[in-house]
Length: 136
Image 1 (cartoon, rainbow, N blue to C red):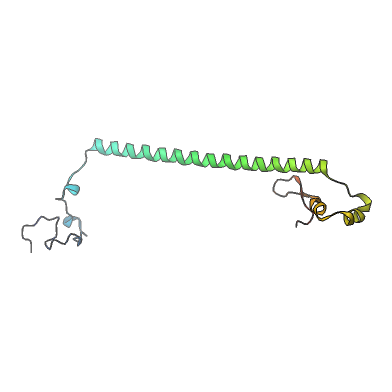
Image 2: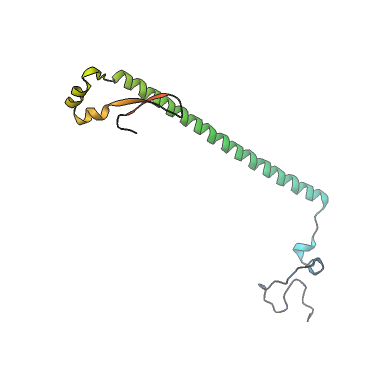
């Protein structure tokens, strides 16, 4: 039932009802969008442009990855340096309890007890660090 309506349009005028285009022979090729074919040069130019865009995206992604790696290294270095400095300062300020440790600890107030540190080997970095005496 074709009343001379163009092939790319429904007879009913219901634009949301699309024609089932399962076979290549029934494809709508008369519409402006489907009919035009690009020249070889233009196709190659588009391909080059697409490749350039992909290359640029890859570069940007790599830059971001490198920046993240650098940031992580810097953070780890700062943590290591902070731990070393804390260890050095604690060593200088440390109070040796010696043989009368129990008497000295009984004489200490709560704040002094909180300041007591013990040394522990950090498994990740392999360095000695001061931790709270009550830390597990």
